[in-house]
Length: 245
Ligand SMILES: NC(=O)c1ccc[n+]([C@@H]2O[C@H](COP(=O)([O-])OP(=O)(O)OC[C@H]3O[C@@H](n4cnc5c(N)ncnc54)[C@H](OP(=O)(O)O)[C@@H]3O)[C@@H](O)[C@H]2O)c1
Image (cartoon, rainbow, N blue to C red; front, side, top):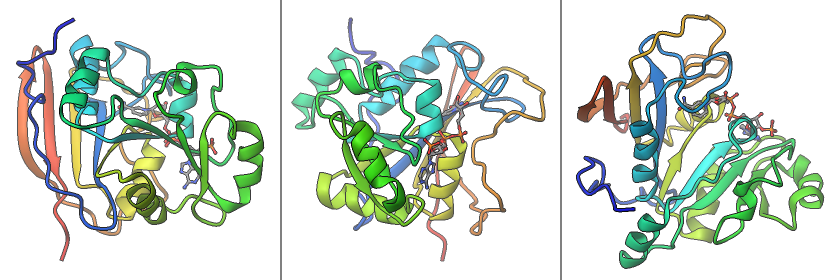
């Protein structure tokens, strides 16, 4: 398999990390009517194309780590890494062969027999709260490196500091879901959004959207479009979240 050298996201550059936390980008696929699930889940091909899936890998190869919420991982117990040809490229660039897998959970109900745990070069990092820590360590401590960051919920700010200080994560890719995205947004800890606009209409009012929490985002961020390209009927948008004064 050859590298998709002509993919517009092969040669992205990113600003350096903002000091005490990694530089954070979100990547999501969304229907034209703003839904990111179909029937409360997402299956291969139900929103994005094969090219969109390839794009996920192209994006991942730029990052030191990929982070997901527990529900996303339960619904998609797939490896959050890149294909071997990207590992060679990462190695040539002085990076680890694979981005590190990071999972946020309190329940610890994670697919322990999946590739998510068996495949990585280094064990996944599980971020949990102090309240859940001992339960998670007894369940998953042999398969992952577990940290408590926050009392009864993972605190995004604290989690990001840990990833920067302990794991030297400079660039972090957030792959959802919407509840985790909301907490990152509320913390103003998202620097970029990569969005695939899929030419689908889903309809149901019960579907999820890209960022979901209990309130309007305090900063009501206004994003800046920094690039866009079309592939077949899909649009690939890259936005920067400007720092608010
Ligand atoms: N279209 C797309 O691009 C895209 C991308 C990603 C996901 N999705 C879809 O999004 C849906 C899942 O989204 P979601 O919002 O329900 O779930 P999510 O954000 O993936 O996960 C929520 C779960 O993450 C853990 N979590 C989140 N914040 C936490 C905190 N502060 N402290 C401790 N644990 C925390 C908890 O896990 P525990 O329950 O384990 O405690 C919580 O139940 C799925 O249907 C998936 O298909 C779509």
